[in-house]
Length: 395
Image (cartoon, rainbow, N blue to C red):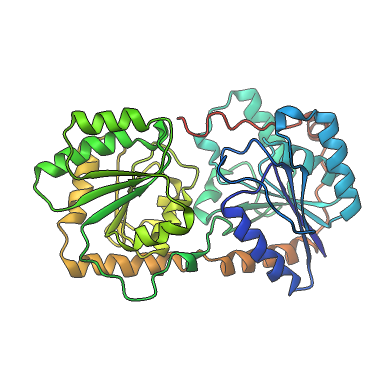
């Protein structure tokens, strides 16, 4: 069996996943390949394309999507797909170039097509026509790879009897964040790791921390990350006269586990997160989590009162109360929350991702690929997708 995974780009967390899957599937006698379309233009500008593996190709390593025509993109991609001739094509959402062109090639060549997506359709604003077109094209897929079972209800128009639903790709290398000794829970640091952009809602976190300081706790808030909001947030910190808030700026990813290990809990007040993989990292480091209820990862990884607390990110008082609920816990309760975080994240490992993907591939290979009707086929041949990440850090 030949399997190819295709996306506009594979950065940050995807690198570890793909490397793991290559070895895991190779051991199961499955040839696994990866194609990313562009070497530039990713919102993760700090992470450049630098791959040297023969099984992992970038079609335009020195270009962004704005520098390549649709015709040239399709020509290069279809040529590479024809060369590899995979049995199953896996891509990101059909709203992107990768998904739109990937499903087109798969249907033209009677191959199985799997779509992965961590954005919930109910949280994406689309007009009726765009939603109808997307739903009709999506209904032609053979498999849907989602972060967790909690996402299944987001696709009521898809028949699980016709389309295989499976889960588990939104994982990280948990071992990188695990501490080697029993975690000490007597530290008084709550840590936040986030880009300093509006959607992370750090202004409300600072306002909540002002109320927490007034309660005379000995806790400190450490914020790691940089971004265009730094000056605004630092000015707010000074105006609020906060004494126990520290902005550390950007920290190398390799150093993040050390900062997690020196903290007592993790907080993320985002107004929206399609998932929020930093939450996985915090749990893997054994941290109790204090999370906005707008973070999709919280639906699967936060168990209220078990390994942390959730709050309304629009309400400073809600945020304050939940953080104080944690601070006021005794040491044993905090230790139990730490252990519970480790137990919960142990169900989202590379190994689980590999096992669920393998089971899905073995089931899909036995089935006939879905054949689109006239209208759906026409839309697939007309829709090219896009690479629009301009709003990734805004609500």
